[in-house]
Image 1 (cartoon, helix red, strand yellow):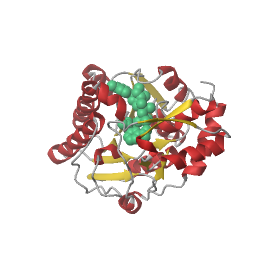
Image 2 (tube, rainbow, N blue to C red):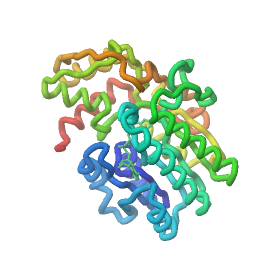
Image 3 (cartoon, helix red, strand yellow):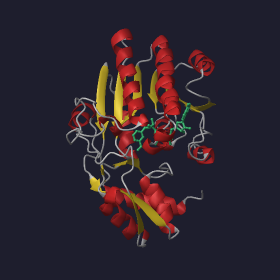
Image 4 (cartoon, rainbow, N blue to C red):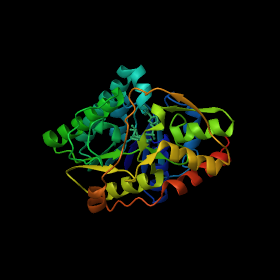
Length: 315
Ligand SMILES: NC(=O)c1ccc[n+]([C@@H]2O[C@H](COP(=O)([O-])OP(=O)(O)OC[C@H]3O[C@@H](n4cnc5c(N)ncnc54)[C@H](O)[C@@H]3O)[C@@H](O)[C@H]2O)c1
């Protein structure tokens, strides 16, 4: 059985759908937190709820009693840990909460996974760990010297706990650093989703730092493909970047959205946003060689798919 934490969220719900379809026994642990509307998460997993190889537990990764119960009751062999407080900007407002969920919650899960002797623990990390000043493209062996948000620090700490649990207890750990994931069900506060909503209703879109930021946008199906490959292969301890390995400048992203939506964006400029990295760009050589990871959806096509989903969704 595979435990997916945060499985009702954006990435987790796509992963769960693939796993359930492949016939895997899947256990989802999610507390439906209020970072964005829990009703959205209910819809994310509505289709899998009826499947016989799927179990949903509504609970918190920080809750010792809850973890004791599920690790005692279910034959968990692998863990994909995606539950987190996500979002760089929001983390600046409540760093303690981010530390509680992303560091203490991860530690709690590592403890139970180690005692259960799970065969693989996959930790969802982020390009944010590279911070500012790192050379591009970012390589997994680069030192993590200058994170610029509480979220990034919490992800670095969770990675280090993962490494520690491997070194100390031999727990097999795979760290996957995701780069700006997008696609259907993307979190509503993320740029592509937010801009789409504002442009559809004719409102202004906020652009920070003169629109000079560049992001390595990665389509959610490619991320799920990387996670599935990681689940199949066994490693002692490895770190992989999962990105598209192309950077997209913000004005170009906006132009693709304009073309797809058939609307001109009204831009409202703001100064630099603390916590935002100027650029993200993944070196995916290692993931290609060791995980057979090969992203296939380019931004133009991905935005087309996103807009199609956005216009069809009823929430
Ligand atoms: N989306 C991206 O671009 C991106 C980029 C890098 C890393 N990540 C990481 O990938 C993972 C998934 O991100 P996402 O975009 O799908 O976010 P998301 O917010 O949609 O999903 C996270 C899920 O975790 C659940 N959760 C939060 N706190 C919990 C707790 N204490 N106990 C149990 N469940 C809890 C939430 O209810 C949510 O369903 C996160 O770890 C995130 O940090 C995402």
